[in-house]
Amino acid sequence: MIGRRELLAWMGTTGAVVSGCAKIGREQVMDENLSYGIIGQMKVAAGKRDELVAILAKGTCNMPGNIAYIISLDQADEGAIWITEYWESKDAHTASLQLASVQAAIATGRPMIKGFGHRFEVAAVAGF
Image (cartoon, rainbow, N blue to C red):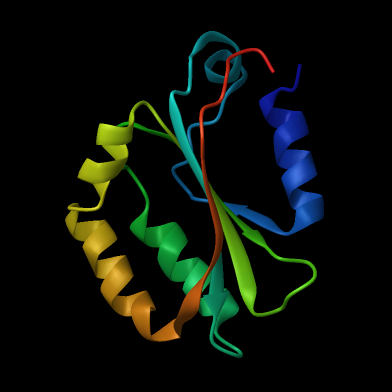
């Protein structure tokens, strides 16, 4: 089983950024069924990756129903990031898209987004 410290250490080696309000904790990983998740690749305009990561990290703080929102830098493609998010439910994710902070992040970041790559919807299980 992996705890928060081990997860954060691993993410540090992969170039991952955890939103400042991420709520990943050993208790949640072990005790909750994380019923809905998305792992998606976003293509970013040249030279805009760090700026977009900062916008997304700021705009995804305090989303009701969010368990984790992790932004990772693609090590093979300087023009791509991966976003891994876990939610209490698919409805919680859908509702988050209407939040003012998320809408502002989308509007500000949209000119920096060239497109989207792979996208996977997943269901995590507790105690991995």
